Amino acid sequence: MTPEIAEQLKTSLSELVAQDGGAIELVQFTDNSIEFDLLLGDEGCADCVMPREFLERIIFEKAQSICKDLKSVTLNDPR
Image (cartoon, rainbow, N blue to C red; front, side, top):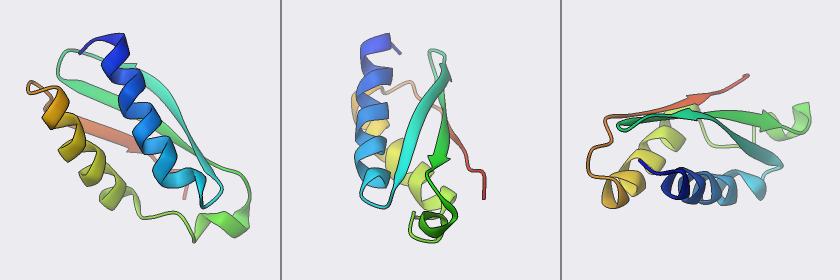
């Protein structure tokens, strides 16, 4: 995975959570994995943001269309 692809995936995931007050931070990536932190602005938005498993599945499916070698997506969710 290239830095450009990692950033593209971060942007896609950020768009999913931003409307509910969340943000995404890229932690690390390798050739076949990527890890993000989910940042929640306040307690009120915690229930609005989609569950971790759902977000991981969405970004994994989107990422595999861009990066065929991707094996795992990890989203560190503080909830």
